[in-house]
Length: 427
Ligand code: ATP
Ligand code: MG
Image (cartoon, rainbow, N blue to C red; front, side, top):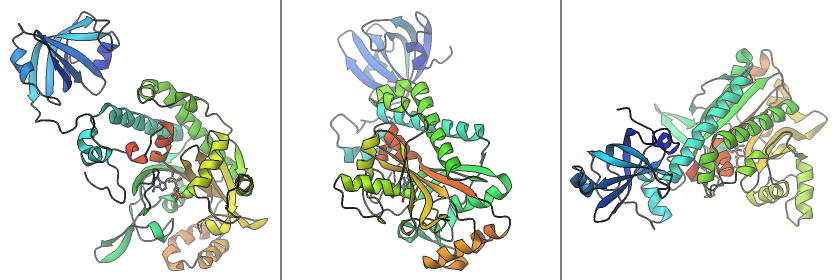
């Protein structure tokens, strides 16, 4: 007999028919004459009933929560059953009998993090992981559709991209290397042959602060492309975001509703996104009584306050040169500003940073010296401006930050199966 996916049974495809299902025991309840087993597989959960006169009764009595099983029976439509269907069991085979499962209701968040390898079986975590997978699919679909070529950047690097304070160092055959913070510089090298490239890869940040939006290892969606300016950049970025949000609202409706997240928030993500300059953002904050001065970087509270006003994703652009990285292109008519833009969303603040990259060799060298960086560390990167330089742009979007916003997660750690933070690297 073919193995049925539980969701297909709940969708009515097997009403009145014999089926086999495979999965794990999710709940168990006994009465004198019947044992009720709720079985879960990757697609859903269904109640299975075993009667006293069934030869599988002793197996059913013995079975424990999280044991793996194979069940054969008949699908019965039953209005009282959650999901509308249940299985009358004919044969129950235990594949792996579980020891007493350590996760019960009323366990603390901290405990659930310690047993993350088991907590991943929860309905909540599996719903999030499904949406994560879909968001990745939409990301790849979008970039392919736009003619971007997927590339694979290195994880071991020899010089910083985003600045020294969050670099993880490591010994590499006696030499000092680092874990990558961003693929950007490598993507820039690749545009000279492929023009439009992107990657989805891990980035590592030695973030010392504990926040709801920082991991030490996260997945970074990074495109980079040639012959493009700031308008092109913001257009692609808002198109990507609205594509992901619209497709997720359509294809992951069930997951989003089961997670209790607000689907309407995704449906209203349409282009064009609002855009304000950094200077306008400072004026807004000052008007709200914030102490921030022109030239300072936004803190989390500033970003949240700005985002509250828009209630949806928006761009802040044209930042002061002193708070942005060496590779940002300066505005030719105002060298105090760089062509950099952040995308902000409510509650989370920044979810991406992008911009035009300095494409003039002399300007780039000036910035490297201004920031006291070592020119020899960036020799190959400077070469890119030596041989056929072109105006180009790119951005980096944090997958987990995006999911935290999309799914109304309280903390970014639930957006990734095995989160790494300052204090958490087990399991
Ligand atoms: P923040 O100031 O919020 O720490 P950042 O400006 O240092 O972020 P960028 O270097 O701009 O981060 O990285 C691009 C994107 O990568 C960010 O907009 C964010 O979505 C994501 N990101 C950066 N750091 C982290 C982190 N520690 N954990 C998860 N996502 C991150
Ligand atoms: Mg940033």
